[in-house]
Length: 562
Ligand code: ARG
Image (cartoon, rainbow, N blue to C red):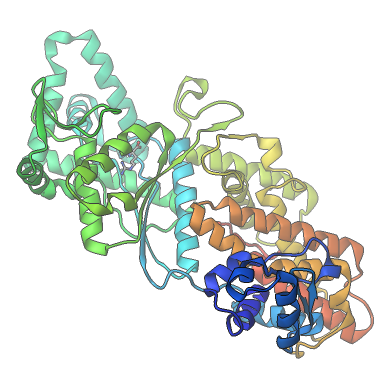
């Protein structure tokens, strides 16, 4: 905000691009040197003068009511903001939601995320994908892109033929309805056990035959498949609701079935198909193995469907980028897929990006192996919720709406623990750490928001309708640091968008909470003097609005009381 103003002023005086000026601006190491500094070295050549002379000349020219003075200090031009005015402007902007300005110009940005597999449990990799992806979608939406979320469900492939065969042999309808994912998983596991035990049954062939029938549009196969999909989606949707996740399009792998012919025709026309051991492959580069697109039994695979999906998405939306928020273990797969697309001559292959995130473990264990059986995401969420419920029962037994708050904070603990880490890093979820109300956690940031609201509820003055006015209360070092931090929201959000990194927003939120808590601890807010109390509460309100927005971008809910 401040920097934008400085750019505006300088732009009128010097012939440098505004973006370039912006990039050169510095924040002086201490306040005696002003609030923003412009180093004049870059102008020396152009103007054939010493930087210090240029700084002095510019200092004489530049005047603006937002700055009390503009001063040359050697080659630097230092701007001193009028803190009274600036404080009011920051709070006005916070109220009007104008601390952020759009950079996306409405351009489409595709974020593919979550993408669990039908009839399989939601793994920890899927929860990371879901939360990082939703946060990214929120970040791009906030920054003025047309953010489009796609759920690339794993709903196609030979495994569905096997599942149909297993269900018809050993399944019971009521059991699947009562407990869809564990029951379907049990059948799928049993199928593989029986393959080993009874080779004479040729179960693998039976499974393949069912998938073939499914691909041919066979009615029974299709009905069962559809049923597995809808039972699984019921569970996924229940989780999305709890997680505050909203995905625009559920376009699973099956969605691209009718585009396979086009892909093959194109690959053939472009002379890219090579036969290899009965399969068809595309050679991408020397460094990586070729990408199989048609198996020797004539069926398409995961990669083939990804190629079709990418083409479909690009042609439909012409997005700036297509982000694939998927586990780092699939890196080779995406290199192959993007490689094939590039070979097909699509320039936009460069705009496809794999957001390869690290592993997540709970107490050092990965979800699928814990106690030798799959742990369901919902069980982990429920455990978090019940632990938070216990804490509330102990600390604040009379809290209204306890169940709801426990759910929001329990889920928040898991989600924030994930998002505060740079996505490419591995995360280890430790219950004690993630639930600590004093650590850098979800409960801590949500509690800080509730603390702000509690101060506002205890007001003894009418601060809401009172006009924003300059007051010395904004100028104490702790108040000013808090207020000034709000102006950095834009930068944090831009960095997050540029680096595909929600942890930038989490970092901003954590710093905001730390600054607020310092303010809260060092200053008495509910003072007797009405004008002073009004000023202080207006500041709390501005901070609370920004915090709420930041938490919502990270998908966290914001209870008013905890
Ligand atoms: N369903 C896959 C899995 O669970 C993830 C899909 C990732 N997205 C993609 N376009 N391949 O491993």
